[in-house]
Each structure stands twice: as C-alpha cells, then as structure tokens.
Length: 244
Image 1 (cartoon, rainbow, N blue to C red):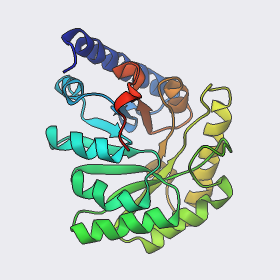
Image 2 (cartoon, rainbow, N blue to C red):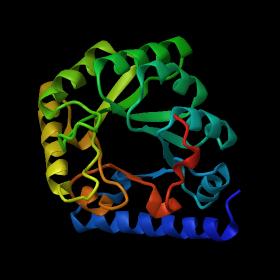
Image 3 (spheres, one colour):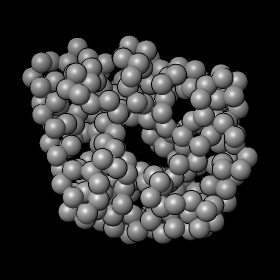
C-alpha cells in the first residue's frame, strides 16, 4: 500500500497538472474542456490510483495488459480507462474481456491489431471501441506506429473495415529528450489534416494523443486533446515488478 505522504503528494501533483493543462489551452484560445488528462498509472499500486480517483479524477491509462487486467477489477467501474501504447494482437481479447470499461485504445499500429480488436469487441458483445492510430513521427526503429505516409491507409481500413471500432484520431510518442518534440507534434497535426481530408472528418471532432510529463503543455498548445501524464503525477515508476 502506498504511504499517505506519497498519496497526498500525488493528489497535489494531479491538481497542478490539471491547472497547467487548463492554462496551456487558454493561452492559445482553446476550450480546456476539450483537453483530457490521462493519468498513466502503470507500475503504480491500486491504493495510489484510488487516491487520485478520490481526488476527483476519472481518466486513467495503463499499457501492460496483465497489470491492467489485474488492477482494473479492483477499482470503481466509472473510471474511463485508456490503453496506451503498443498492443499485441493476440492480447486484444484478453484486454477487452478484462477491462469492460475500456474507453479508448491509443496505439493501433497496423491492420492486424485493428482486426483483432474488431473481432474481440464483436465476440464480447460490447459497445464499439474508440481507437487512435499510432504514428511513428520520430522515425525511431524502437518505436511502434505507422509511418506518416501510411497513416491514411490504416485510418481508412479501421474506418471502413472494422465496424466495431470507432476511428477517433491519432497518437504519437515524442523523442525521449524532447529535442524534436515540436517537429513530432507538427507531423501529427499534418497527418490529422490528411486523414480528415481523406475520410471527410472534421478536425474539431478529431482526437490527438500527444504529450507526456515533460511536454504536455506544449502539446496542448499545438492541438493535443489527450495528454498522457504519468511520473509528474505518480512519481518515478518502479519497473521491477513490470508485467506485460
């Protein structure tokens, strides 16, 4: 169980992040209500997540399937869960069965995982699932995601051939040292324009998931609707007990 001092610090940090996010949106004339702070709780105990929940937050993210399905049933059903990052296609049904209140998957990086998610939603008889296509905007071999030149093709596949999925936008992960963050974000917004044109979608209703602890304010200023903030809220992660 997390110590009370750690929990109090996390709740305070959450309020600070929410305020910073609001101010970033207001600086560029955006509606702060259009920005979602996804509190990424990977490697963190249920007790600490519950403390953030009790502070009023409802949107949380995880990215290890086994850890996710272990933790989610122990927490309130009104949490809006997001799966963040690369999802192996063979774990799609396990994830959806284990987290009935999963709201969105950030990280569909190919037709195979899209098809598996689509079939899993259908077989489980659940409501259509919102998904974001992951784009590798940095060009790093270690990163998942489609190349910017392939994003329209994958978005069109999800939109036309996966009736149990709701194509909702795009996601990217920036460079670790944030040196190329503006370029990564500009690339994703350019991809948004291309996809909206190809699919006849409105940019106003299009989700962009970009920005993490070190650059979420800049991401919001550049159009992000989902910022994935983990360590700034919860503190450094403990990977010693990581489960895939």
